[in-house]
Image 1: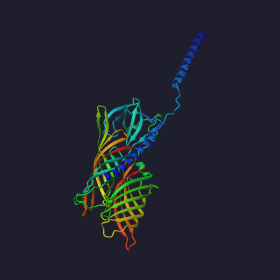
Image 2 (image 1 turned 120 degrees about the vertical axis):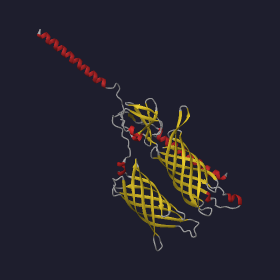
Image 3 (image 1 turned 90 degrees about the vertical axis):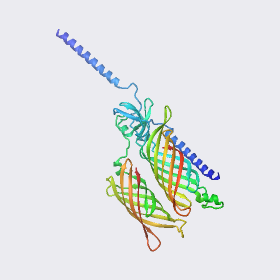
Image 4 (image 1 turned 180 degrees about the vertical axis):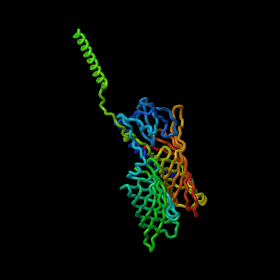
Amino acid sequence: MDLLKRPMLRFALCLMILCFSLGASADWLWGSDEQPQPRVKVVKPFIEWRTGPASGYPVFHASEKGEWLTLLKRKTAWLKVNDEKGREGWVHVEDVLETVDATGEKVVLNEPRFDDFGSRRWEMGLLMGQFEEAASTAIYGGYQMTENLSAELWATQILGSASEIQMYNVNIVHQPFPDWQLSPFMTLGAGHIFIEPKSTLAVPEDRDNSIGHAGLGVRAYVTDNYFIRAEVKDYKIFTSRATNEEALEWKIGLSIFF
Amino acid sequence: MENRTKHIFLTRLSLASLVMFSGLTAAQEDERPLIEPDVQPQKVDEALIDTENFEIGAFVGILNIEDFESSFLWGGKLTYHLSERVFFEANVGFAEGGETSFEKLAGNVQVLSDDDRDYRYYNVNIGFNLLPGEAFLTEDYAFNTNFYLVGGAGATEFGGDTRFTANAGVGYQVLLTDSLAVQFVVREHLYRIDVLGEEKTSMNTEVSTGLSVFF
């Protein structure tokens, strides 16, 4: 029972913090409604309403041309609306983009497209793969400085049967063809590697070395604001011994851009 | 006679023009609203539309740790919905391993120290809303639901060792409101471990339920 109490308590604390933060966020999100929600007017013959934010949900109503809809909230590509009779439902963003606002102009919502992929500023993602024989998981964030050049920060965890490795890298990425949907890049960087051998091995000795790397990869734009990223990197581990070590890593993952 | 005709013609003309003119001014007056609105017509400001693509939550459940009994599990998750179908999910979970059958039978033996019995995992997954649906509570009250598949990878810390861990599972989510959801998850965690001598694949089943909020 003692074993149960501690995690229970920690869990309850977490729940409390969660509830508190939700209460706080609810206040600034919904608490003071000074500005009215935006309204749009249907100009197509009709707009279909669904019961939920996915195309699998059934259509239960349609707004006719000339009706006014209030935009309440958004989940992925679906907007929750209500009309003057107080009905509520979900309409697709493509339908909302064909409505007009009170000034009579077409509604403009920021829909990420391939064009934005070229002009992105920030990207972040998660990649998985192999570092030599071991499984490697990495997260990164990048800032695009020019069309061709970006700087990135990586944190990698490598879990093998002989050791646990943590690796941090800074690198510069050059993409020669920023307009391509499938855009190759090359990269150069440096960092630090922390190797912790498994305790079951005979002489466990923690190691902490500098590393440098060069790599090749590709970014493939998928849709909206995400893309697939795949890369191969060759690491040089600078040891204090007579010879340096080399390691090859490949990984693939999904990234989002802003 | 001529004068008279002129007179009639002219008066008629002036009358007609008068009528036309007054009609015109009346029409002009009609176009103006009775009360001038104070507000200018507003363009749609996207910032006023609350987007709810993120979801944060906590869960509790039972984790069956292979060879080390089943124990209470708790944790948190963060989800980002890319589209109506696809989402990213990150989890952290905490549990504590129990005793092996050997420890129970032999009495005074300990395979692992208390610290090494702490079980921690994290994972990052891709999920797929396979069957969106509705659950009907009463005749006119329905909850939106999602039956989803989820799978990915991460790490498990247990027995003084951190191991790469793959996981896959299914979940059933019931949206109590648009922003509040309850979910039931069954998930299998797989990793290689050598805590009991030789290295083997450890299968750990998680059954959990949680509450999450969209923001």
